[in-house]
Image (cartoon, rainbow, N blue to C red):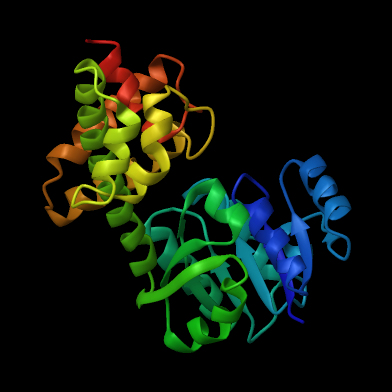
Length: 291
């Protein structure tokens, strides 16, 4: 049994922490909205409530974070009430937030001052992946820390991979989000064509999903896109945040991103029309509004 301080019980963190409790670990939770943490400890007997990130991580083996952005990470990880203040020498800090490589280095440096291992470990798979325990975890850090953390990650991960040193987990997630943005725009255009042509889209999806055009997005979002259903999944406002991070890094590296930059603008348009909480596959609605 590992003692874990888990910070951030949002759409992803709540089920992830639940899997850790179910796996038999001693989990202390902290959430900015206390009522969510109170509900969690009621739903998962054996877990305990902490009043601060430092308290959650006090003498814990591992601290885990999954919050909103770089500033959110700093607020829960650093300072006298932060996770690092509570973690003891020899423990591990795992940050599952999708954030910048800059904050990954900042966290790793702060953790190293206390001889604490650190992984930047953003996840992919969405809320359903978190609930079903089949997330993909992209890790940056040293191999020793990763090997120690891997059995814990297995509680909610289908795949966990050490990409390289600190920051590479976050950079891998940027690659992931840029790829998704392009796929969803292409899928939106393709499905919209089929709909306008009057095709039986159930047959179309069943046929092309097994061919070279097949993808996770097509298999898991194709039918709901046809059905115009988007009240679930990975919210557009989260993708806008993620793409902002990815595009800033691409600009820094001099990597052209014409498609991703365009799709980011499309998502901004959708947010402006009230689609902030719709799934990212709602890109197709933008095409429907102009046809």
